[in-house]
Length: 145
Image (cartoon, rainbow, N blue to C red):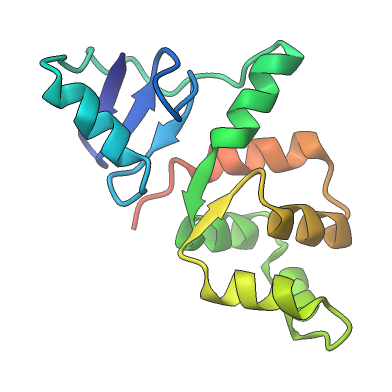
């Protein structure tokens, strides 16, 4: 079951469905949106939008959320700017000692996945805790272009 924030086109997964876990926020531009379209094609209808979910509380739910959380690179960079961390990230990316694959992945990405190895590497270099990173993803999901 899904609901949709009509103001920005994001769908909220209310129950596990296919590759999507409950609590996932999926923009129309995300490849996982195809799962939502398949669900709608089965004759299902969207539930009334009731707001964005809070982060799950159990360890298993939290890991499921982390595995499915995706934001755009624009949302990530604006959130980093808001947190005062964008310059730090840019310095890490510009540092020749930073793993070249991490640099390429960041520079070429259009999406940022919470569970990606790139996010793990960069957040470690930035000294971000899992909890802070979770909150940053949650906050970034509300940023509109």
